[in-house]
Every structure is written in structure tokens, then in C-alpha cells.
Length: 381
Image (cartoon, rainbow, N blue to C red; front, side, top):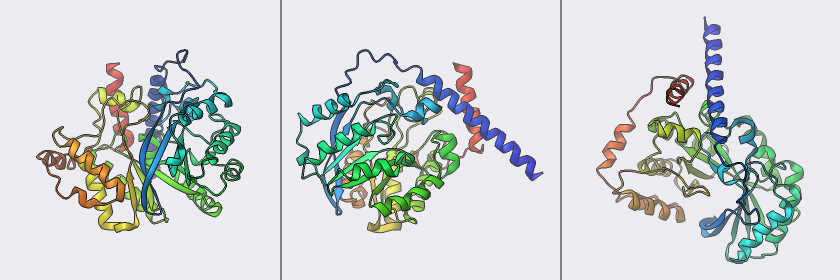
């Protein structure tokens, strides 16, 4: 009997994943694929954020290079919440010269010596040879290395692309600067990772690469996801707290929280249009930070990533509208020194409504609720 239930569960899970990926692939086709109006010598943009060195806040510049787009999108339709593919070239190869021109475009506007931390992102995996040639990456790092006041460079990539050869070639150029790899860890729950996010990443991958990175002196920055699709607000909060604990127990104390927004041509967007998804509440972020502070004190540096991404969101984290700005300002203030006392005076009548959402229960398991919700979308298409 148990074997039959296990087989049936496996079949339903496979069915749910197929439906998620089928929808994701269909939505990606809505992106403009010709790219004829895109100047590949100009990056998507750049912005200043707060960073931290030796537990002190410093200026950090984030540079968004325009690239070919995440290869995972081509393989599976991509992650359910990510709309970054819409601002890439949708597979068109970008030359080394074009990448260098993009960086020069930024360098003509700012002085990197003003920023101890420099982040180079490509809305994909910068260590994937099929997205950014390693020779182009080497030239980029040589250019950054000329700025002596830059102390740390952060890149973003799925960690399986961080091969020993690629990483060593970069480290040889950096002349003592620190290298950090940010990557979408998302969640420690493998079912949510696979079905809700369509990530194709496993804890085995992480546990394999973590000691390797530490051995060669590379720091990592896991990016967690608040409220993937198909989860209730309460489930989403519990998942983040569980994931933080998983990482903390493995000696990872610097973590970023990415907040799901509604981005065009994504599974989340389709759910949102059918009133099957609401972005997380700002109260949820405050609650998570207070819980982490109580449990880990100042041993955990839990940074809340701004939810203004390289692609414009259609909807984003919010409360009732009246208290949103005050809470967002408090979160920005928290990010400077990780001081949760900035939340002590926050109050609004909508907090009661948020608390009621935490009591909501979906009695369907994740595979069944995915199938149910995507069937609703299918009937309306």
C-alpha cells in the first residue's frame, strides 16, 4: 500500500513539474526575440547600494551587463518568478568587445575607486561559458583590478558553473581583492525548489561546493526567496526561517533575502493575473528579521535586497499603502547596520489583516495545488 502511494505521489509530482515548465516555456516566447533595437554596447544599467566590509557599511555599485540570457530558461523555461530574460538578447551571442564596451560605458560615468565593493551581474550566470565567455570575464576583471580602492568583487552565478579552472583564472587576475559568489539558493525545501521555483538546484550541489569554496578562499552569498508561487504567506515565512537555520548550521552567516515581485511573462505573473498570487506583505519581512534577531543575535547578517530589479515589476511587496513607505524606509535603515530596533515603533491597522493571512491553510499538498491552480489558468487562456 505504501509503495502504491509513493508511486502515485511521484506521478503527480512529475505531472506538476511538467505543467510548470510547459507554462514557463510558453510565456518566454512572448518576449521580443529579434533584439533589433538593442544596443549591445550599452549595459542594462547600474545603481548604488549599501554593502558591508569588516562588519561596516560601505558604498557598493551594482553593474547590470546585458547578456545572452540565463541558459536555464532555454532548457526548462526558467525560474517561475524571474523575468530577467526579458531584458537580455534572448540567446544572441554578445562579443567580448561588446561586453568591454558595456563596462566602459559605466566607467565613463562613475569612478570605481569610490566603491569598495563592485558587483558585476548579467541577469543570468556570469560563470557560464555559454552566457559570458571566460576570456571576456578575464578582461572585465583586469579592468576592475586597475582600481586599487576596490576591495571586493561580487558576481552572481549558479554554483555548478564555478569550476576550478574558471575561478582560478579570475583569482589570478584579482591581485588580492576578495571574490564573492552570490547564487540563488532560494530554499532548503527541495520540493519547493523543484516544483514551485523550477530551479533545478539541489542541496547536494550546495554541500559539495561549500567546502571547495572555503578551501580556495572564496566567500559565498546565498540568495533566499520570500514567497515563491503556490505557497501561503505563513508557509513562505516558515520556509525562509527554516532555510536560514539550515545555512546558519553550516556556518553561513551572510545571507540575502530576495522578495518575489510580479514580472512580465513569468508563471508568477500568470498566477497574479488570475488572482492566485499576491506578493508578500512588508509585515512578513519585518517579522522574519525580528525572529532572526531573537534567535541568532548579531551573528547573522541578513540583508534585504531592494526589490527594484533590472526589469520593472508589475506588482511588488506591499501592505495597505498607508504604511508602506515608512516600513520600506525602516528596512533600508536596517540594511545599514542590521539593527532591528528601527522596527519597534511601526504599527498600522493592516497588521491585523496580515496576521489573519498567516492563519490561512491550503490543505492540498504542493503538487496537487500546483496542478489545480494551473488548470484554472488553462481554462481561462
